[in-house]
Each structure stands twice: as structure tokens, then as C-alpha cells.
Length: 155
Image (tube, rainbow, N blue to C red; front, side, top):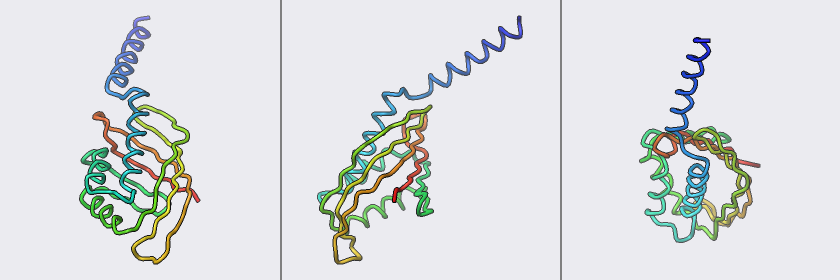
């Protein structure tokens, strides 16, 4: 009986600590939505460096951003920013993100969304129009910043 009571007490302490340090479902949904809005904002005809800085503000200082399909991983904010600044050379007609399903876990959000856009990359002389489904998995730290992002691009 005493062992059972001790086990229940220890499990209760761990469970309460896990929930006390975690983000609520509503907070996680809001953070994921705000992140995708910032992603969309950094890919507009009127994008500014401030839009890119706002997007980067969602990441913790130590983060991993994985583009699974392309086998690319970024872990440095300065390198990340330079890449995003380079994309400002592209001519963008529009970019729109439509959020589909969200699955919420303990400090994790998986989001299925569709990205629609029309862009003329700086290295091409024609516009490319696309509508691509994506799945993005965001793992948040105790401060509510993204510490690990996995991007799974659709077809």
C-alpha cells in the first residue's frame, strides 16, 4: 500500500511539473497560427527586413530548421536571415497560406497547410505559379519559441 501511494505521489509530481512548464493547447495553436502568418508576410511583394526579423523572432537562439524533402538543415539565425534576404530579390506576385488541420501535443504542433503563390525567382525569367500542400512540425521550448522545426513539403 505504501509503495502504491508513493508511486502515485511521484507520478503526480512529474505530471504536474510537465503541465506547469508546458504551453496550453490554445497558446500552441495561437503560436503556430502567428508563425504561419509571419511566414506568409515575409513572402509578399512588399516584404521588408522587419518582416524577416519578425519571422525569425519565433525561433529560439538555439534551433534546428529541417527541410526534410531537400535534406537541408539550418541552425544559425544569421545564415537563415541572409538566405531570406536573398529571396527578396525574387519578384513575388502573391503568396497565401491556408491553414488546414492542426494536431497539438506537449509543446508540439503539427500543421497541415497549403501554400499558394506566384513568384519569379531571380535566376529565372518567368513566373512560376504553385499550390503545394505542406506539413510542418513545430517543437516549442519553455519560453514558447521554436526550438525544432521540420518542414515536409508536398508534391
